[in-house]
Length: 372
Image (cartoon, rainbow, N blue to C red; front, side, top):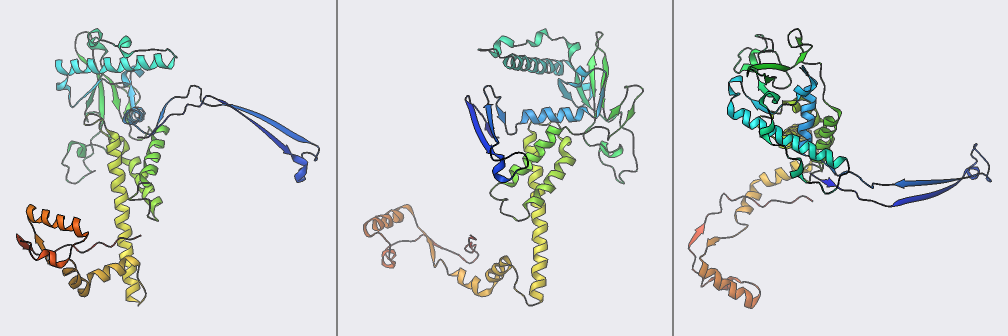
């Protein structure tokens, strides 16, 4: 996550003189000149801009999922806690939801004060106490498939609950609130259009926000510039595959299990890059086989593989290190003294050395050749 902070507080004045007639311009003769004065006031109060962070990612994921949902009021879209089922809405979950809402309201009040230009603001001055929040103001997100229609033909051998229902692009849920009598009332549904009682199921009416799509593009672009990937000629294909993968599974991130979507997306991008790499390696192997079959020169990678796989190379590597012995600390100290005096060690210096045992180097790894 790279943060860029621009604090430029000066005025830049540029005077540009253009002689239009010098270039036989139809707009004037050589006597006609244009003097432009451009004054740029750059960044007196520019906001700090971050590359990508989990907070912005979570906000955009939430906004994207809301386009697939239907709520009674817009305020019902903001949940305070996520629970697996209705039975988990108890005293503990209500207390945790109050803490989460108080923390969110405190952060929002502090950010609003900062945006208004107030100076010397403190987070303590805007702290909201969880005790002041009534339980009827809380919104619970419950993961459930009750409003998703059944589809028995989608999978032959269904194993999970989702396999019995219609396919959706992210885990479905419903939002609930407590009324004054303490009863749960449904105030929102995912993958839904229209009213909660007279609406209908829909899995394709929403869309991803533009900002989240830009974040996906930036993630793939930045990941493709890493040292272990940027050298491949098919780097653009890797980025395209990763971008397509993110567009498919991006909204499947479950906020109840983790609050780190950056790691989730990075893992998906890594798998996409690795997949394209394996496909290209397979295609290269087929191409090299065809070249060798027709008596032509294969790729440099295949030539190195053929050289290292030969019996002569394997025999030479067995004796490349000579006899390898293990020594103790006392013997090592003596050799270090001789090395300091002479500057190098000769074969005679090892005659008086007592070795503990001889190491078998038959199955040792060969020397790795660096490719520049």
